[in-house]
Image 1: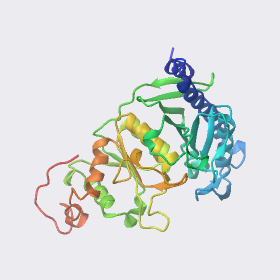
Image 2: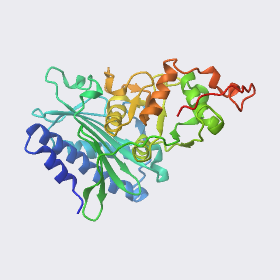
Image 3: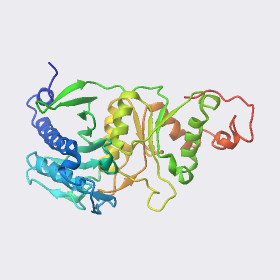
Image 4: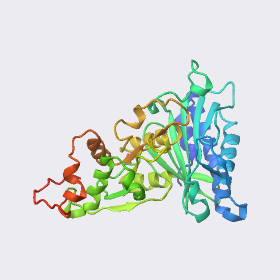
Length: 352
């Protein structure tokens, strides 16, 4: 019999009040995710879940399901020891309990553009200790390394909860007949050597030279400096990309680029990048903005945006090497590659 999420958390908490508070909060997020999974499964039978509303406080287009997801998480977390809640769908933090011990940040629904086409969706949460010296609006102004726990739920053919309590990353799968989340993968170890990358290539012309160079190397395939052929993936849901990479390896890139409003990337540091980085690093991977580790960055606001690159540590390190100037860019651009217009026969040492 597989271990339930409740039993797993009970064993982990072991009557420690601080851990019990975290466990209760994780269970509240799981409860909201279970209800949201049921709603997603209904699709158009639950109404027009893809109907557009006003822009969210973080500036993205808001859909009907975004609003409903937010309401489900707020309702569930009111019964947890959470003092303040930050959400993508609320401009300011919500004060939930005066006696709460934790601060929680959430993206209630990731992948809104997928709602109408039955593609993967998700929810992300981050749990931090309350700092009594900070007002509610500033509880997030701490580096991601201060997180106590983080997780995400993915709503696809199966509903799964990916969770880290700070000592490894585990997966719990929803058993729909009983409503229980059951432990199906413990102590994930993110695979290395997988030749897959995820990026929205339609923005190539807007990227900075280091990102172009990395992708150019991948596109050059077995005849290029990487000496290997690569596959590309793009699911328009960072949760779905993270789930695949945790299981299969590879790298995800959502860099900043030259378009107006995209210089600092589009993903939110507090409730998307930081919790995902926590989960990825606990599984042996790495997460960066291209220059610095995501977990080392201190946000300046709840809705701050950031570039995000995560996956196998060697692949993330290679991207950072381009940004640091440790790998030449011009030599590896398509015009100068072995397939290019200005072909050079100089042998390049293989580097995965």
